[in-house]
Length: 371
Ligand SMILES: Nc1ncnc2c1ncn2[C@@H]1O[C@H](COP(=O)(O)OP(=O)(O)O)[C@@H](O)[C@H]1O
Ligand code: SF4
Ligand SMILES: [Mg+2]
Image 1 (cartoon, protein in one colour):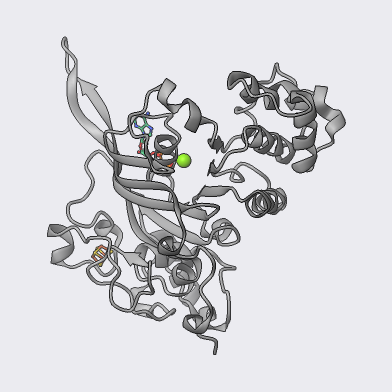
Image 2 (tube, helix red, strand yellow; image 1 turned 180 degrees about the horizontal axis):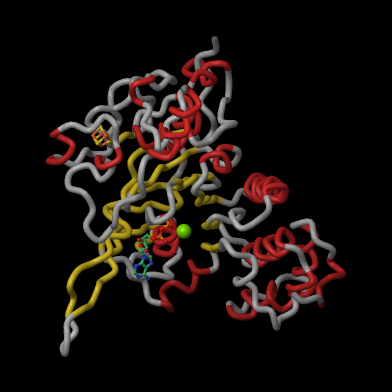
């Protein structure tokens, strides 16, 4: 039985060993809700992102995972400064960019790029591929050696598209090819960090691996750091050196890939892994019990007190409702593996049968099968 602890540490596998490119501390975004008549006033807030700490090292790929509505896209948009944070601090290459103005951001803006989920709506249908990829260079006044058109052709080749298709329009390409155009556009300014927000979720499963491979190639060959957002741990597993798991606006667990996949300590991470059928990395994980999460993510307008996961957690006790569990390196965790839970899972790979909570509909099905 191989023990991961005896393996040499992966380069950049823990935040501590790599030079930080991006550091996020206490990052918070509350979207105000207005109501009342005739005078509208603030009546509440969507707590989309709440007190998130995150680090991405130079050239490192970090996965950010959680169910829909957990605040992943908002986090990505805060980091790329498409949204203004309510609180917290964002440091990029040693520079505080939390509230940097457009002008102050100019030098940094080209270094942080975003790839969006939907390759259909994120490309202007009236512009040729050449124009789409060229425009970030125009906006930022960048003239590469040999000219912009030459650079665009090189980028098309790099992402696996025919440079001769420079004058074609987005509708002439398939979904996977369009996402390659999005990648080429993100690369046009030689970024150091790319926030990729579910870049393959909208693509056919058969195409997903190709685009993930392309991003992996880009990350490795060009040394670009990635924050790779996904709702699925399977996609992130192939790509990320470290993984952060988000639930209802909070990071609940973070660690290097092997720790997260083979030694999950937070019940939510465990449940997410259970939803991934092909996750087994070695013999140890094959016995993992399937856990089905019952119900939906609660509303971020009135998140549960204490631990936000407690309304769906099969291990919840009184303390979970009164005390918020801090994100810590709990006993049994490897260096850099942090977990926010009062009653964490054993540092073994298997969930116990009694931990398995079935979705009511699934449970009914299984009961019928048993009879
Ligand atoms: N502009 C906005 N105004 C109000 N609420 C928002 C806005 N953007 C996102 N939200 C809410 O914030 C929460 C987190 O959303 P999001 O970051 O998109 O999650 P994810 O990407 O993990 O699915 C959701 O409840 C969503 O409805
Ligand atoms: S703190 Fe309590 S409710 Fe939250 S995940 Fe841990 S056991 Fe479950
Ligand atoms: Mg999203």
